[in-house]
Length: 322
Image (cartoon, rainbow, N blue to C red; front, side):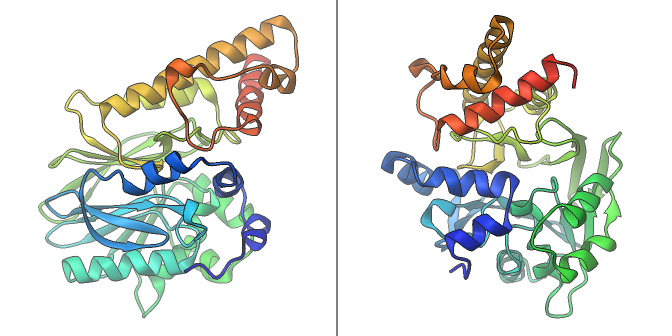
């Protein structure tokens, strides 16, 4: 169970972490139950903060459930195992979250993670990364330079252990795809952007699994605080795969192509509405206040006006050339 109170969590976190917890106050019961119960894999471990789902052939997804009030992990993540190495995805909100995933990796594969990958700098994906370096472990950490620098300079609270872990990171080239050989299993590491200036996704070929980071929010309205909306839409479309893989979103339950289509339809609708408001000459705040997401797009977990205002603000910045 998290040792952070709700107030402490909000004071210490920003970006997507506070987006999630502030919204949780208005999440309807159906949304909490849907997020908690919908599984695409076999649940092999569960805690109040999340569950670990076996997706087959040495791949597991951690689906975080912060609506419980436990903020140990907050973001989703996972484990990818090869014959020679084990990769953990994400650093989570607190060191206890990373340590828990590492412990699960050791129980399931016989190894503590040998490698760790961070998808972007937001606190709920990075702040707990030092948990992987406990018990004398020294995994190879991979992140882009932007993720390393912004996680060090922007995330609160300051943490010397996190800073030390980030200082040793191997840089992911933000301009081209690379691969990570785990021994009999190759993970594609693909730099993207849209949710932040520097996002990274990881793809496993067999079984086909896409770790999408916060480029994808399944059934939950996304956080646009650092977004460049036109790039976000392009990146999500580039992620979509005709083989209908399992997607591990940054937040929400695991997804399939139908869920990605639903998400893209929502992103497109927000674009249409923001552009229309901008053309009318109203402010982003006013346009958002006057807007309601169409019922035809279904329910979106944690939907409230402040998130729409942030989305409109991101669109206005692009449309104004900022």
